[in-house]
Image (cartoon, rainbow, N blue to C red; front, side, top):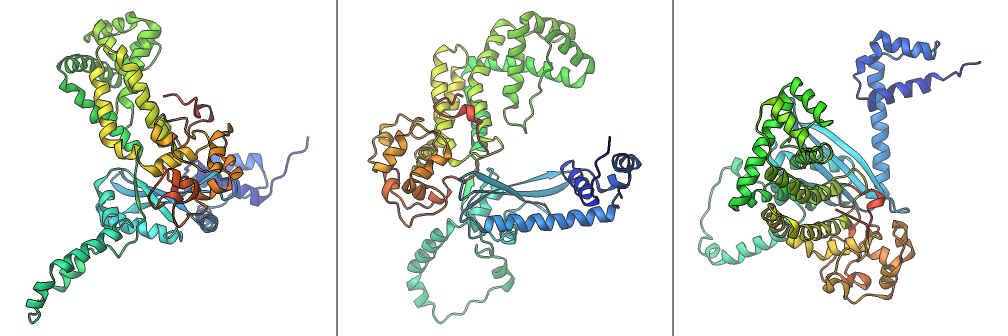
Length: 497
């Protein structure tokens, strides 16, 4: 049997791909075992040196960057997301870009940067770094929104340098001028001196150019499930049973995490390992409680009782177990909503309102059957109302949801939305049973008004049925990144939370 001969170019590409995608150090090519592996597969192959590998990856980076810039040059609208973090005493900023393929309307994404930041994460440092990255990829004038979390440094950066502040700044300047007119005349002959350094240090919002700001809905929903949920403790009965239940669970989680023997005891008796809550991971408390509830359901209360006896820790009583089951049932739709919005690919703005609407419906449905956790439902519903009330009434978000063929109007029963006057073409789109994105190509006027391929100068035609304000976000209806897309099986009207 003849062996297949592979060219040196192909081998070099395979090594580069292995190092990049496997996050391997450049020194891997110096390992004798790696050299033996390549030589065994291709005896005549030459193993590139570490300097050659480094330069090859640098060249590949330049090539890929040119391709990304070329791809984004062909589209009119782009959305970006950014975050910053600290790891091993070093700070980093990551930026991703998202846009729609003009022909297929499929989402395209690219990682633009993972860049180290020097010094503190102050608002001006973040603004400068983000502005430089946008300029580097020649997309500053194409970005419709940049999505970030609720960090005060990001919020201030966009407040000071964001595009939405231009009009407000002009109004402020006008007001100041009109209020100070008489004083200027009286003091015309006076000369005031001021330190040059103080003038240069004042931020006027023009040295950086940032796009409009989109705060992350997932982060907001996580605040509802953590901060707002704690307000249920204002009910003394709930507070008593929740604290006793969670304190016993915490002892169990601590034992499992700190002792290998305890972890083995739990796995032998429960056939599962416990999950320990982590404050930095969304939904971690829910998953930790859900695991205990699952053990009770599958293995019976006896399994938990035996574990507690073996580890000599307090046993959860029937009322506490019932509370944990209710807590899991209550938080399950919240956790699923967060997972929907933070998935990895292809979500659009239009997923937000249907997801929130389904979440509210599910909470209303389960509340009557609860014995202990009604205050928790009330706290979550109040949090949703306080944090999302304006979002739920945003005409652009409503239009974004209707434009998604998976949803159309199936997500809402609001007569104010359903009975809006519509054009014949929009009525035809809403009546169509197809749920694939390419459906929009069948209705050119709908696609023209709502897709990011073209932003009309004013709302007209089908768009006027759902918004009475200028379409500042109509270019972003499809591309603002909240996170990612549900699997196809979860499409409306079969979307369940």
